[in-house]
Image (cartoon, rainbow, N blue to C red; front, side, top):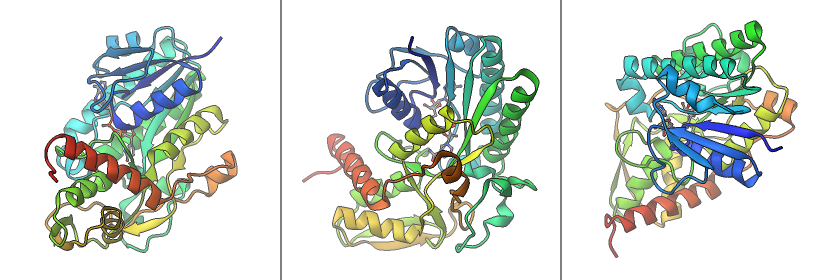
Length: 324
Ligand SMILES: NC(=O)c1ccc[n+]([C@@H]2O[C@H](COP(=O)([O-])OP(=O)(O)OC[C@H]3O[C@@H](n4cnc5c(N)ncnc54)[C@H](O)[C@@H]3O)[C@@H](O)[C@H]2O)c1
């Protein structure tokens, strides 16, 4: 019989794509979130509105389930996660602790946990020309305040549940995921979506506001690669946390140029160095992922940005925010 899967955060960006991916593979899927997917309805067999900070909700969500993909989180772009430290850490701690314990009580066979590159120490990310981060670089710890500390602690809780109770856990550290159906406005959006929106709304030859001096570096992974990676990591024997990201690094200025090129616009960059910009440089070292899975993300940035930009542009057009 086909496995029954729970995806938490199924109303969110990656969770929604993951439900779609699992449905295409023939699984029965229950999606859970506090909100509906923003831009299209969920393909889940069952979708329940539950606040997973609550213990009873986590028990209800995991009933009759074989595997859990736990993606629910209070999260957003750099502006959001640097502003709300206590709220984010409290909300995510409640969700993840209760989800792990409910998985144990309801005898779940595998538990996937979505961690983040924000667990890596700030002292290794001070230069734009940064050395790609290996999994072993996580310690000595100095993660992103609030959001990053909670993720790192919960990685440990996954390890402890395996140690004490034999619950099989899989952990992936996502590096900057972007794509269609991701939030692009309202304060929770991340850099690629925010820049796509700004480029789409700018007139050719006009200005574009960029947070920081634009020389900060990142790697960006298209969402299709992310859900494929989640699936492969969960199916594998890899019980240690693994990076899941692209290993091609660009500056934010280069990201703006790539998106402007897709849009066919020439824009003048206006840098605002008072805005939060996160660590100076970050890139993923994929050697462990390659070695254990014989796979790594494939999608080129140019292709992924083209799809994402055109989706955001059409959303803005449909909302009447772009005319002509
Ligand atoms: N997108 C990225 O670049 C990225 C990078 C690193 C890690 N991650 C992690 O991946 C996971 C998914 O991220 P995303 O980009 O899809 O974010 P998202 O904000 O689009 O999705 C998270 C979902 O969790 C839901 N949620 C929040 N609180 C909840 C609660 N109390 N009960 C039930 N549902 C709740 C939200 O409503 C949202 O739909 C998160 O754990 C996030 O921390 C994402």
